[in-house]
Structure formats: structure tokens, C-alpha cells
Amino acid sequence: MGFENFGTVSFTAEAKAADFMTHLEAGRVMATRCKKCGLSYFPPKADCPRCLSSDVDWFEIKGKGKLNTYTIVNYGPTGFENDAPYILALGEFDGGLQILARLSRDIEEKDIQVGMSLVLSPVKLPDNRIAYEFKKG
Ligand SMILES: [Zn+2]
Image 1 (spheres, protein in one colour):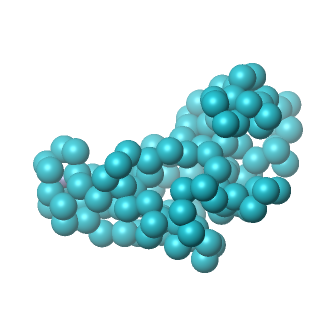
Image 2 (cartoon, rainbow, N blue to C red):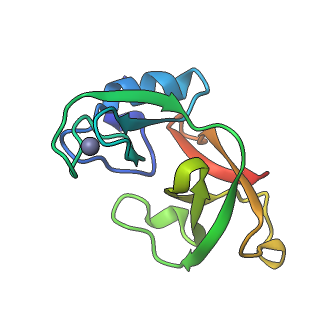
């Protein structure tokens, strides 16, 4: 299992991408929390950029968040040109954790409202890639 199966997000080099993918395949979307200063990160980071500690905990992103803002992407980045148009959304979850992900195509544009309830779910893409997206909460 490697990056080639992962569709929509690129990681910084220090992210524990393999662990993240293993969880995602099992149906869990995970983030990390720094044990020293308590900040949470998504996508997960193996080191805390704020206090530089490598002592991090993994936790599952559960429960409902709310939509803070969104944008319609008409031209996908290299490799994802055929995915556009899609809607990229910023959600806020427990503890103020900000998460950037695509909005599910199940949600029609006319139904999108800032403040609406969202859940973050793993999703299998048609070509067997695995990613995550926001669904209606
Ligand atoms: Zn920290």
C-alpha cells in the first residue's frame, strides 16, 4: 500500500503516511495530537511544527463538524484534471481542528450552507484509490 493508491491529498515528508493509509483502509480517518502542547493536526504530522516535539498521539476524527467555508474547483491540479469540477470545503471539528477535504458529490450545490453539519468519511474512488471526503452530518 503506497502513495499511488491515495487520491486527493499530498503529505509533507514527515507525515506518517503509511499509518494513515492503514487506518483509512480500515475505515478510520485519523489525525495526530501533540502530547506536549496539545495541538491537533490533519493531515497527521509526525512532529509538531509549533513546539518541535515528536511525541504525538493518533486519534480518530469522529463526530460532526461544521462547514466554515468552501470553494468550487473548476480546474484540478496535475493528476486530477479529470476530477474537476469539485467542491473543496474547510470544516471545523472538535477542539477547533480545521480540516480541508472535498465535499461528497452526494451533496448538491444548492444544499450547501456555511455552518451545515459534516462528517469526515473514508471513500473508495472508482480507480481503487482511497481518499476521504465530507458527507452530510
Ligand atoms: Zn506541540
